[in-house]
Image 1: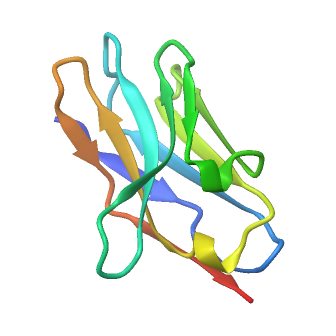
Image 2: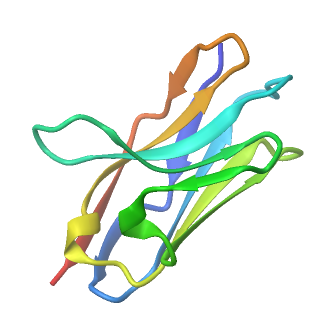
Image 3: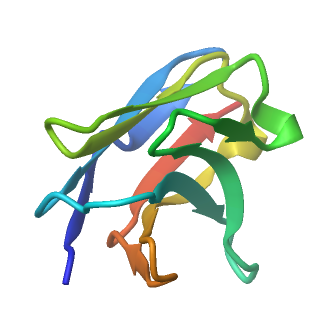
Length: 116
Protein backbone atom coordinates (compact mmCIF):
# COMPACT_ATOMS: atom_id res chain seq x y z
CA UNK A 1 0.00 0.00 0.00
CA UNK A 2 1.14 3.52 -0.82
CA UNK A 3 -0.21 6.72 0.68
CA UNK A 4 0.04 9.93 -1.33
CA UNK A 5 -0.13 13.29 0.43
CA UNK A 6 -0.59 16.49 -1.55
CA UNK A 7 0.24 20.02 -0.52
CA UNK A 8 0.40 23.46 -2.08
CA UNK A 9 -3.14 24.21 -3.22
CA UNK A 10 -4.89 27.49 -2.58
CA UNK A 11 -6.33 30.58 -4.21
CA UNK A 12 -4.52 32.84 -6.63
CA UNK A 13 -5.42 35.59 -9.04
CA UNK A 14 -5.38 34.91 -12.77
CA UNK A 15 -1.85 35.06 -14.09
CA UNK A 16 -0.37 33.88 -10.82
CA UNK A 17 1.48 30.70 -9.92
CA UNK A 18 1.10 27.78 -7.56
CA UNK A 19 3.26 24.77 -6.84
CA UNK A 20 1.75 21.43 -5.90
CA UNK A 21 3.75 18.68 -4.25
CA UNK A 22 2.93 15.05 -3.61
CA UNK A 23 4.86 12.79 -1.30
CA UNK A 24 4.61 9.00 -1.41
CA UNK A 25 4.82 7.05 1.82
CA UNK A 26 7.36 4.58 0.46
CA UNK A 27 9.57 3.85 -2.51
CA UNK A 28 7.79 2.19 -5.40
CA UNK A 29 10.15 -0.06 -7.26
CA UNK A 30 10.04 -0.75 -10.95
CA UNK A 31 8.48 1.20 -13.77
CA UNK A 32 5.73 3.49 -12.61
CA UNK A 33 3.86 6.58 -13.67
CA UNK A 34 3.28 9.64 -11.48
CA UNK A 35 0.75 12.23 -12.44
CA UNK A 36 -1.67 15.00 -11.54
CA UNK A 37 -5.36 14.95 -12.37
CA UNK A 38 -7.99 17.65 -12.03
CA UNK A 39 -11.64 17.25 -11.18
CA UNK A 40 -14.20 19.95 -11.81
CA UNK A 41 -17.50 19.64 -9.95
CA UNK A 42 -19.71 16.97 -11.48
CA UNK A 43 -17.11 15.74 -13.93
CA UNK A 44 -14.59 12.93 -14.16
CA UNK A 45 -10.99 13.42 -13.23
CA UNK A 46 -8.89 14.36 -16.23
CA UNK A 47 -5.17 14.08 -16.70
CA UNK A 48 -3.22 17.33 -16.32
CA UNK A 49 0.33 16.00 -16.52
CA UNK A 50 2.27 12.81 -16.00
CA UNK A 51 5.87 11.70 -15.78
CA UNK A 52 7.17 8.16 -16.01
CA UNK A 53 9.96 6.68 -13.91
CA UNK A 54 12.12 7.07 -17.01
CA UNK A 55 11.29 10.74 -17.32
CA UNK A 56 8.80 10.69 -20.22
CA UNK A 57 6.39 13.62 -19.98
CA UNK A 58 2.77 14.04 -21.00
CA UNK A 59 0.68 17.19 -20.67
CA UNK A 60 -2.91 18.09 -21.39
CA UNK A 61 -3.05 20.50 -24.33
CA UNK A 62 -4.61 23.19 -22.14
CA UNK A 63 -1.58 23.38 -19.83
CA UNK A 64 1.32 22.94 -22.26
CA UNK A 65 3.82 25.75 -21.87
CA UNK A 66 2.37 26.80 -18.50
CA UNK A 67 2.69 23.76 -16.23
CA UNK A 68 5.78 21.69 -15.50
CA UNK A 69 5.80 18.30 -13.81
CA UNK A 70 8.89 16.86 -12.19
CA UNK A 71 9.77 14.04 -9.85
CA UNK A 72 12.43 13.22 -7.31
CA UNK A 73 12.84 9.46 -7.08
CA UNK A 74 15.07 9.74 -4.01
CA UNK A 75 12.55 11.79 -2.03
CA UNK A 76 9.54 9.96 -3.57
CA UNK A 77 7.95 13.25 -4.55
CA UNK A 78 6.31 14.66 -7.65
CA UNK A 79 5.78 18.36 -8.18
CA UNK A 80 3.53 20.38 -10.47
CA UNK A 81 4.62 23.95 -11.09
CA UNK A 82 1.68 25.92 -12.43
CA UNK A 83 2.31 29.29 -14.02
CA UNK A 84 0.05 31.76 -15.81
CA UNK A 85 -2.94 30.25 -14.08
CA UNK A 86 -6.37 30.88 -15.54
CA UNK A 87 -9.86 30.54 -14.04
CA UNK A 88 -10.42 27.38 -16.10
CA UNK A 89 -7.56 25.74 -14.17
CA UNK A 90 -9.76 25.80 -11.06
CA UNK A 91 -10.57 22.41 -9.58
CA UNK A 92 -9.48 19.75 -7.17
CA UNK A 93 -6.07 18.39 -8.09
CA UNK A 94 -5.26 14.77 -7.30
CA UNK A 95 -1.87 13.16 -7.18
CA UNK A 96 -1.71 9.74 -8.80
CA UNK A 97 0.70 6.84 -8.88
CA UNK A 98 0.27 3.91 -11.25
CA UNK A 99 2.54 1.06 -10.27
CA UNK A 100 4.11 -1.62 -12.44
CA UNK A 101 1.26 -4.09 -11.93
CA UNK A 102 -1.42 -1.55 -12.82
CA UNK A 103 -2.62 -0.51 -9.37
CA UNK A 104 -3.69 3.13 -9.09
CA UNK A 105 -3.06 5.10 -5.92
CA UNK A 106 -4.65 8.50 -5.27
CA UNK A 107 -4.05 11.38 -2.92
CA UNK A 108 -6.87 13.06 -1.05
CA UNK A 109 -6.97 16.04 -3.41
CA UNK A 110 -6.09 19.69 -3.00
CA UNK A 111 -8.23 22.63 -4.09
CA UNK A 112 -6.88 25.13 -6.59
CA UNK A 113 -8.96 28.26 -7.19
CA UNK A 114 -7.99 30.86 -9.76
CA UNK A 115 -9.79 34.16 -9.38
CA UNK A 116 -10.63 36.23 -12.44
